Length: 92
Image 1 (tube, rainbow, N blue to C red):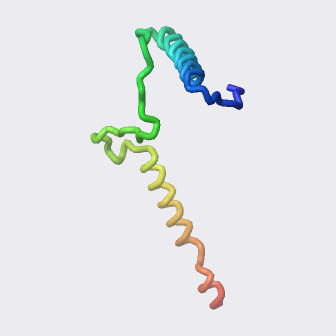
Image 2: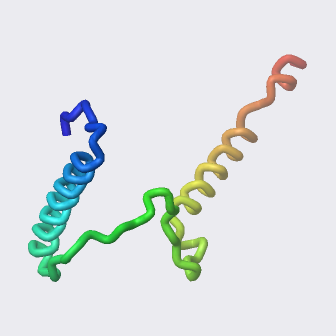
Image 3: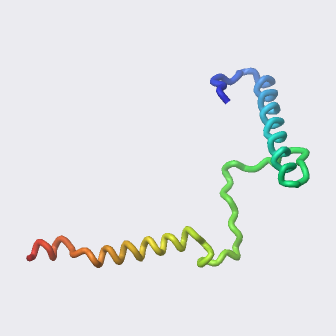
């Protein structure tokens, strides 16, 4: 995608957009065929700004980010209590 210009002509932009979508559909169908899945007739139109939806039945212990955050917090608290405060060092 080394294009650096965009046509001001709406018909040309729409034609270019259709061409790009056709290439994306062809690539997706090649991937699906390799995985043994049925090819698509058209690509799904997804909202690019939408946040991914997580299932409601996810347990906190199954959330890798939450578990790792907890471990980091525990490490920090352990390090924080192991290092003497600057006030204690200055008092000596």
